[in-house]
Image (cartoon, one colour):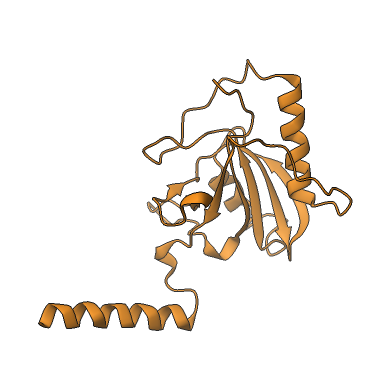
Length: 179
């Protein structure tokens, strides 16, 4: 059994690609495994761990989500003293993604070695701050899964090209139905 501190991560996810939730309609932080760009989405709303806020790819804030999920914690920053001062975020989560795409329960961290903890803390700092003199990447290890952000479909298309693609796709479906 591999004992890891950080199990999954997402880097430079855009704030405007997140559905932050409304009355009785919870928010979602959607991601897809980097190595399976067409696989099932996972919702990281309830992930726990460390997060960083970026403004124009510059680190502006570091926080943790021990008592609440990542989504609710980030949503607080939309209306607190950091509101309007960040446009992206990265996260480093301690919950892994199960085979069914759901987040695991909170893990037991008792069997971690000092070496593994320090490797992961160093990796978080390197991946967050991107110091120019650190030529090596952080040492998370091969078992840590990286996730790419998916824009929440409830937000609608992001660009006019996406609108045209959706129209073309719908027209194609209508054409297939009529033949």
